[in-house]
Each structure stands twice: as structure tokens, then as C-alpha cells.
Image 1 (tube, rainbow, N blue to C red):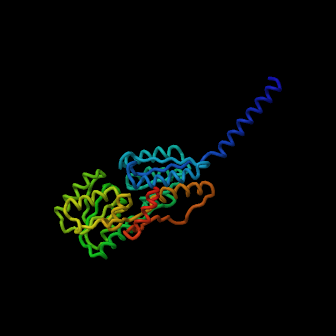
Image 2 (cartoon, helix red, strand yellow):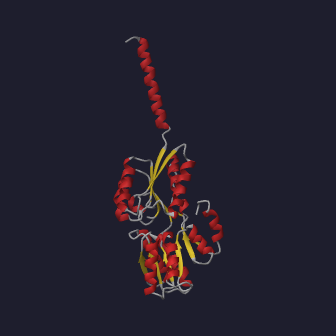
Image 3 (cartoon, helix red, strand yellow):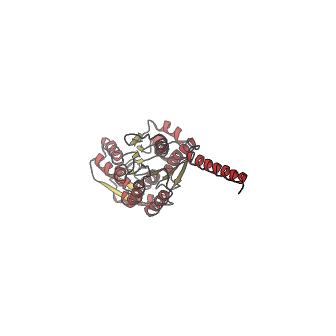
Length: 315
């Protein structure tokens, strides 16, 4: 082999080494977001906008992916988490509606050294699972505030509507609501199908006409609750309120057809974890405590302002 060929091979090898090192030096920070929210949910569309806005902000240095099950299915969600962690991302954002079902998958990620932040649900479970922090609201306290609100209005007989049976976060909301109200609360189990939910609420009110208030544990059940109250002839007798916002919920509050909504500002729950993980990977920066995005109360007094921002996809 003559000297020219040797020099050529050396030059080419050096170029490959430099390119390899450059690629590694400028590799994007890979962040995977896994939530239990369904695509058709108005609530989760706002949270997802937070994720995509953060991804756009850091598009030159971060690769952000959003994944979720087609339905509220903890088996499928656990598999999605497993697959996400197998790809060895630089950060994981995950909602934890059921720590018993998702705990082993999340723990496997954190024990593998993947920086993990819980969002939306899981505030009471994240530390035991190894997550760095939680971005969201504390569900029990939010429910307690809602129950206390109705108690001040003289309500003693109320019910919760649960549209995601098995979601521990919703159970905590209703437990807090009951304790804040100071009296026993029934749970009306429904599905996300509006007709099914409405019919079950009508049936409940026909058997329990003395019900003074119904709390929807998520905005997907809010409109069926209002429709059920109307169909059961309970308008003016049974008040309604809900967790989380939607255009229909905000319009109802503005018009005086719903008492209030408990707002957890889900846009921040999508946006902030991505920002935090980017900064953590870049500079080892991390908030010292969980980041609370709620609860806040939307009433007739402030509904108009919130509607303005909801139309832009932020509430």
C-alpha cells in the first residue's frame, strides 16, 4: 500500500471520527411524554398543546414525542411506558392515574436512570416510584375545596359523577369533595359516552330527587350532567359543578347554568415538564418542590376572561 493510499485512509478515518463526535455532541435531547388522555378529550387537547408548544420552542435541541393509549386502558399505557423507556430517552413525562397498574413500568424507567417527571395525576405516588417531581394539582385538596364551596351554600346531599372508573386520581377528587362537604356522597359510575352518562344521571335523580348538587369529576361528564338534571326535571333544584374546563363548561358557567369549575391549568402540565427536562439535561437545573398548577376556581365572575384564553387553546 503506497503512502498516498495510507494518507487517504487516514484522512477519511479522521473525517468519520470527527463527524461521529459532532453528531454525538449535537444529538438532540430525547423526551417522551406518555399520558392516559384520549385524543378526543377537550381537556387533553390543551395539555397536548402545552407539550407541542414546548417542543416547538426547543426544536433545535430537543426531540419531544407524545404518546397515549386509544382508550383509558392501563395495560396498553403500561406497554407504551415500557416501549418508551426501552428507547432510552433523556427524559420521561408520565401521568399516573393508577400507580398499582403503572408502578412497575415507571419504576423500571427511573431505576434505569431515566429522569422522570409525573404530570396531571400521581402527586401522592411519584416519590415512591422514583420520579423527580410532579407538575399538576393535588387531587384531594382540589376536591375538598369544591365540597367546601357547596357546603357554604347549604348543600348537604350531593353526588360525584365518575367517567373513568379505576382512575385513582378521580377517586381522590371525590374523597376530598365528600370531606369538604362534610356529608356522605354517592358515586354515579358512567362512561365517556354522553348518552350513557346522561341516562345514568337521570336514573339516579329519579331515585334521589333530594340531591342538591352533582360534581362531575372531569369535564367529559359535565354536559351530560347538566342534560341529565334538565331531563329529570331537577333544574333549579340540583346544582352542578365540574373539574376541568371545556368550551361548553365555560359557556354554562358564564350563563349561570353551572356553579363553578375547578381548573388545574392543564396547558402548564404539558408545557412545564418538557421545559424542566430540557434544562435538567442541559444544566442540571430542577425545581426543589412539586409544581402546583391548580386548583383554581372558575365562576361566573371570571368566566369571560377564561373564555378568551380558552379560544386560543390555553385553558
